[in-house]
Image (tube, rainbow, N blue to C red; front, side, top):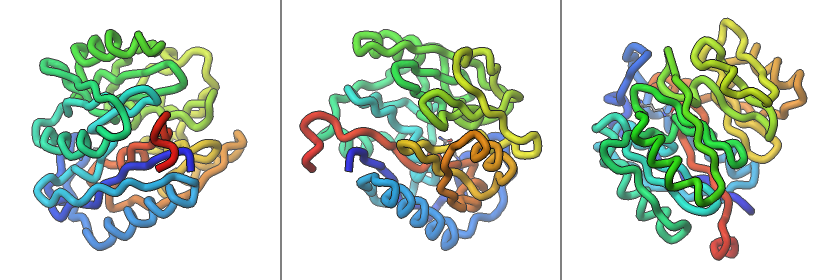
Amino acid sequence: MTQYAMTRAVSASLGQCELTHQDRIPIDLTIARRQHAEYEACLERLGCELIRLPEEPELPDAVFVEDTAVVLDEIALITRPGASSRRLEIESVVAALQPLRDILRIESPGALDGGDVLVVGKDIYVGLSSRTNEAAVDQMRQWLAPYGYRTHSAEVNGCLHLKSAVTAVSATTLLVNPDWIDSEVFDGYDLVEVHPDEAYGANALRIGEIVIYPLAFPRTAERLEHRGIRIEFVDLSELAKAEGAVTCCSLVFAKGPGTGSK
Ligand code: CIR
């Protein structure tokens, strides 16, 4: 296996999660945990070695581990989540990543959620959202340039994170909801737009040549398949009630030099 996928068990307090663009509706924990297990199984089937972090019962949103770090081949950048309720999620992620990568950290006044960071090759797109600010983008630009990364920022409107609005479905193709992000930022990429009835359909998780994609957006899935994108479907309907989607529930990263034999 060439990639790790770090996940975290669903918290017993998930029902008290942060919500920004959705109304609170009851979450069935049993279903949420089953769907999460199926998502983990899907990652394993696609060749990822799982690193499962234990549940944080007091931290409702801890399952959305993506928001705590941006793991690149060279380093791990630990975020400073925009919602203060989520900042306690960080330390256990640092402990898990420390043996695998050198660690950099976003510092105050920077605020960054990993859901606002889209990495495509050496280009890093950072969403300016209710969770992520310019100060964090400045820190990223400065710290990641020595590794050859180009950091770009883009305004996000109407959704929680950049990756609610755009994700990569191949090395050259992005899936986008143009109502939430200005597509012109992504000049040079092939773009697939979500079906107009499926606003939340732009979040897909690319694992090699396959994307993990929610069952909830069949019309957008049809558009992807039409473009030759291969899909593994998952049902994350209970986690979607917590404003989570497929990228949010894992940190997927290469086994770096010195860690590949693990
Ligand atoms: C939150 O509002 O922080 C969580 N309820 C949802 C986080 C989803 N994370 C993601 O899109 N990366």
